[in-house]
Length: 144
Image (cartoon, rainbow, N blue to C red; front, top):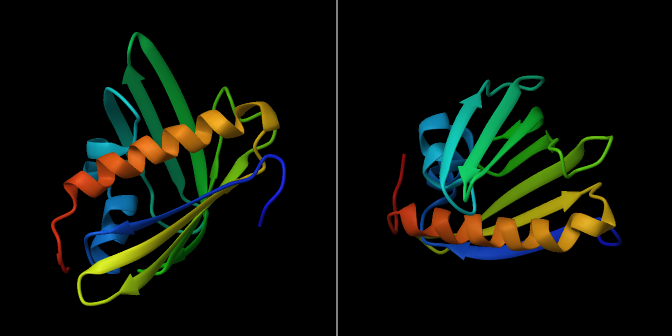
């Protein structure tokens, strides 16, 4: 998937796919990393059709994000909508794919599509920073 309004980020993360998946789907874990700066409020109803709510607070700004889970295939794939004041009139779409790499690492592929072209770069930067934060929380080789 590529084109205007689509970003793709790949990262090698130092944990097994099941552990990485937990960091994407458990509210207590999302609160640790799902904001480029500051603090996070997170609410998760992990089921297809369930709601996701992320509130990022930092640098004098509060940004509320809402989503709905479209696909949940642990520990390989997670797809959800992503709506914020910056994503336009229609919900954008986030797809997270996790592929085991060796005994204790995971290759992550994140695609964020349906973004207004004007915010694609800032979203790429934001996701990049958040994935750096996530990586710092992952214990190498962690398992369920």
